[in-house]
Length: 347
Image 1 (tube, helix red, strand yellow):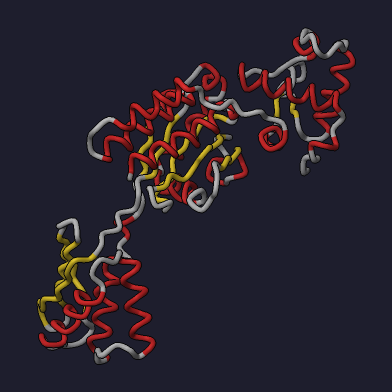
Image 2 (image 1 turned 60 degrees about the vertical axis):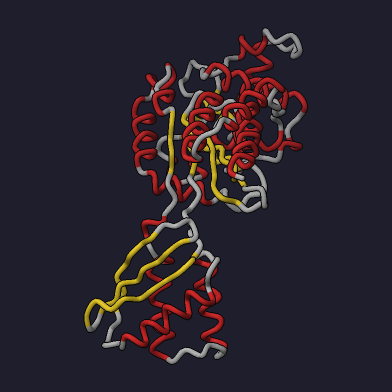
């Protein structure tokens, strides 16, 4: 059943709910009425507190894992807490300086990405993740070299000097002159564009009839670009660090959950697909438990934020993954700040 809006809770219920969630996120253990009664601000008897806890349980915000145990927040309760009650703890000046110092150290960008995932793991006490920017080479030159009657070799030269060779299936015999015309068209008009930009510009020119290419050459141009733009090897790469931190004391109580989570992390392409959902977000996104089917069995949470280059373009996503009892108030702003710092490093 959907959880009620936070404003529908009484002040007493909201305060007790807040204390239960905060204590649970801190300790990892269900919280009982006696422990709550010791909070000086409540001034309520254990019996009165138990009555409120029962009401919150009926609303689907709390659950009792055992008959004699205290309460812990449900995933719906955690979502209500994160969206409506939680007060974030902004990184201190020392924490900000430490993160920026680590990410500003000279070295290849790959090292900075690795370091970022380790920083996120240290911050959260869980696993840190960084989705590496997609490789989007910009064209400098392209040639089509005949191999036999039905195949040609596409030679792509990027502005970064990298050269890649791929085979293009022609479908029928094509003359050397047609291959040369197609290659010259690409090199002359599409230099400096990414593959996606080149494909879009090329298609627009051909469809509009502005292209001087004949039908055979136009088909070759489309096929040559498609060889790269549809290449499955261009999928994002995911760096994960700190999996061992998921095996804490709380994990021993539910080894099956942790085993399921570690299996999920092994399937990096599925995790990358989840992080893709955060690419278009304006701010940090939080996925709690079964809100995402990938982690429904492991009962895990993901906190993810896009990181941008100096032009504001989103180039990747970073975040943390761990049990639903993550310290959201601390981790969310730290993930956001780390994303900003990595963006400055990307340039």
